[in-house]
View 1: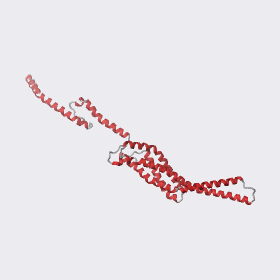
View 2 (view 1 turned 90 degrees about the vertical axis):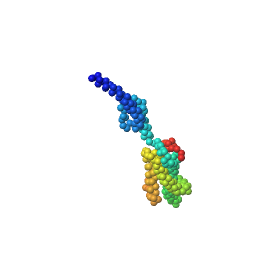
View 3 (view 1 turned 180 degrees about the vertical axis):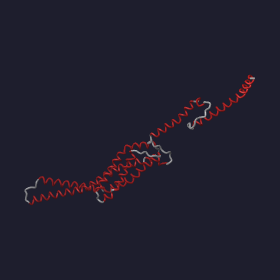
View 4 (view 1 turned 180 degrees about the horizontal axis):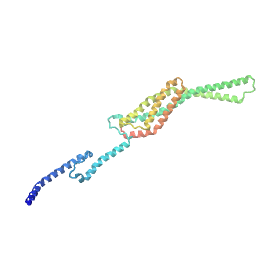
Length: 292
């Protein structure tokens, strides 16, 4: 009886053996078909691998593991160099091209030259105002010496002291020299020149000082705070403060004139300190933008 039961069991196992092999083949094909799709999900969930196929194909697994690792490395390198402001891709057209991007450094270079010219004309205008006071002081001293000579002449002195005569001649020479200088400066219309160049700096310089960060944001969708940006903001503030003192200066307030000069000297100093960083940024703009 036991022999008959074993014989029947072996026959049933042999009858089901082709069916189990067929099922295993179907599972193998199904797993191979799904493996690329699951890999593209960057291993969001564990693979269903009852047959151990993931261990059978180590090369494919290593390849799919390298893909997200490479992407992470590229992202890290891009984050490490934020100053490489790549263009957004043409969404804003010419406003993110090289011409508009170079407008800020070109105009600001002209504003630097205009600031230096404004400082020169302002100094000459102040010199013209001070020359009048110097001439008045020298004339007062000359009158005193002339009075002394007159007293000596009325007293029937044999000769005027040589020192007094030499000093009187020196005062006369200084007065003549300063008078000539004042005429030359007055003919240059320095006040009008200083006012005109200051107006250009305040209007055009402020406008393109703002245009620079706006253009950077259009190209890179973010700003890059740093010494250049902070110094530029300081320059614009100094321009505004210096211009706000003009009404008081026109009323003869010496404190307003002194503060006006101080703000403009500070602006020129910050502007000069900006030149190296501005040149570096200009080279990067040329590198990462295209015409127009």
